[in-house]
Image 1 (cartoon, rainbow, N blue to C red):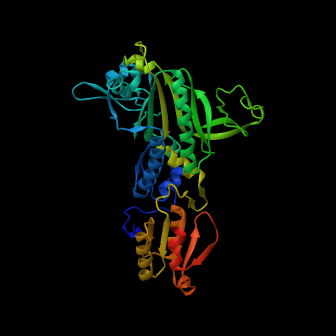
Image 2 (cartoon, helix red, strand yellow; image 1 turned 180 degrees about the horizontal axis):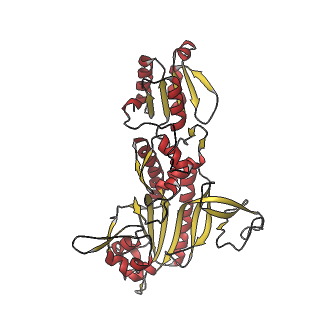
Image 3 (cartoon, one colour; image 1 turned 30 degrees about the vertical axis):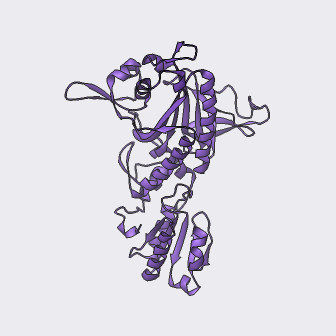
Length: 409
């Protein structure tokens, strides 16, 4: 893509009403634009990052048997009244149509997936079964804050699984847990699986996947020797205590942001919608349900909170909008040639072909944060090539054009 063709522009100053790093940098760099509190437009660069995150999540969830669907975001009120959520969930957006009918905007999908699964689950042979979607959610937050970390409109991956018994749910939970850790590692994030209250979804203990960041909303304790972690709101331990799981490590306190969760829903929703199956012995039972969430847009914000410096964003290569940012400094002909070569090699490149000064181009490149920067200039060509620099490093080097594709390919 040529930067001159982007209809969006960068901004030198951060918006006055944004206090978090992710909101400031994503807005300044032209990835998002705030419509109102908790609602953002995702611009061309932002969509490219979203798609990278979506694809990583999709690949790992497909690998554990998830079948992708898309469920409506406009829900009939009857489904929410069956589960008692209509009168008990305070963040639920409610809409009355001109015909007098009541609807809800989806803030979760239990009320939709359970009656859907009822149409296809009859026998133990139909279990286990899991389906997921990557779709938008709506929650009537009293105070939308923290940029992309807490909004009123946001995108999530919802996976729902159905099991013949609790043992099978526990088996699948371990599989899903490992898939979640793979997702976070591919995003360059260090996540801890912590115990937390099930909240309005379940009376049982739930699991939250927490990423360490100063912009987080929660304090957690985690073991420095095993995978144990717990939200401090329900913790029986304190910082410095021995780990209650492995008895070897010590518990550390950290500020963290929730990047995913798992709820053991038990039989609550299958009973609400009278979803049953016949066992091998002919007994009629209600399946056990599991719910597994990951905030897609939230993850974008978390990545930016972790990967930035005083100049701007420093994207991990796995989710960067482009791999290479090509800057041409008064060498348009040579820049065009290298741009064509990179594209022909299948390398994602943003080509800064604008009629702008070197200082402006360098500043924008640092702000946008693409992993590799290539500069074509009289100085670099005189030295035998182009200047190549990683965004995460200070030093650059002159590379022969012929070797450039091999290095970046």
